[in-house]
Structures are given as C-alpha cells and as structure tokens.
Length: 69
Image (cartoon, rainbow, N blue to C red; front, side, top):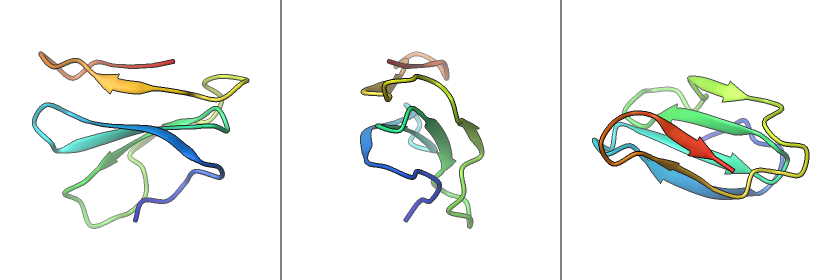
C-alpha cells in the first residue's frame, strides 16, 4: 500500500521498465513511487499540481518523462 494521498487516486501508470509508478489524485496532487523499494512513501511529489484535481497521468513509452492532466 502506497501512502500520501488524502483523497481518491484517479489514475496510475507504470514506467516502461515497471520500476516506478506515478499516481494522480482528485485533491490536485501527483506522486511517484519506487515499487521495488522498502518504503511506501513517494520519492517525488507535487502537492499543488492542479486546483481542480489531477484526472490522468502516464509515462512516455520511450523514456522516463511523464504527463499529468
């Protein structure tokens, strides 16, 4: 179980190598988690990404960049 979001997770995406996930939340935040790590805490987070919530997230199939909307 990954922690950190205070509201519903609206989207989740794996990196092409399946080592990380990005999650988007209806509270307006997104977080990146190392799914192979021992911690359930995010390794990177944006607490004020959008005023109306983040509805979607995805990684580029060719490289590490990701998009949230």
